[in-house]
Length: 92
Image (cartoon, rainbow, N blue to C red; front, side, top):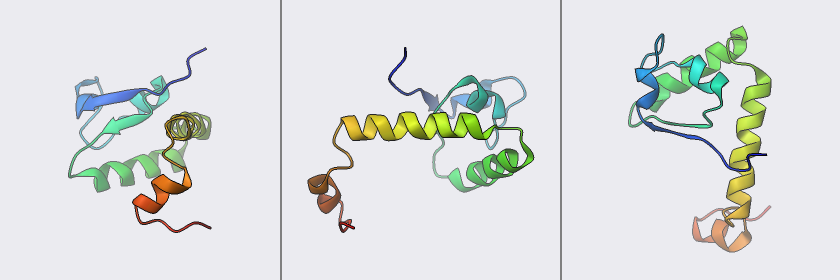
């Protein structure tokens, strides 16, 4: 099976029929894990949360995306102690 993650193009999701710059349930449901929203990410986040609460984006898709993102980060050492220290994040 697929072991990576899917990253959208810079505002590419707004090219999908029925999508806008700030909302694209279809892309999330299709399996895009990371949307490349720039500068204006807050409205996108707010609309995505609202869609998830209404059930237009399923919890299963969100969980799948989060799992893939965290898996890739872990594989590349982004969650190791030295990396976290370099980012100024204290250990727990």
